[in-house]
Length: 213
Picture (cartoon, rainbow, N blue to C red):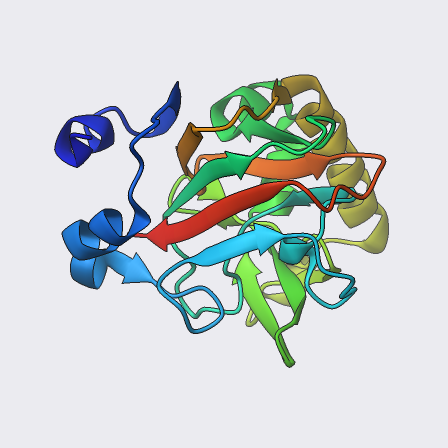
């Protein structure tokens, strides 16, 4: 497994890597690793814990990972150890494609909003529009960016309309991936939002999750 060659294909890779070695990745990435729940990587397998949607397999709406970090990880790596029933799909949506579908008014409103993620023992906020891309919390709420002049604070109607248009665009841009054992997906989560699209619990599905910058 040539990690250097694989990473040269960023921001998005989807391929079969039968000799994937997560410890080799951790050693190679070193200080670029962003810990997930205090560990260098996590094994994502269904747990009946409603407080952590990362370790479930039912539906999990559009989101960004690691929002409990002050600087959320730039890249997400998912490697399939076991696909389970193959009914729990990961979907990605390109921010570039989404922005092409949004009105100027909606983009202006999103530029003035932050989303608040509730979890990991706290509430953490990040601008929705960041570094030319997006960060979005699934569980939480949105509010105006701090210190906006009164005349620039979006109205409730403007906020609602912008979010409806955003989610319509996300549905249009969604690209599904059905997992097979050995598949590895690496993406720039500032340029791709993702969700888990599933209508069932699959206790056999097992992924490795690793974050890095």
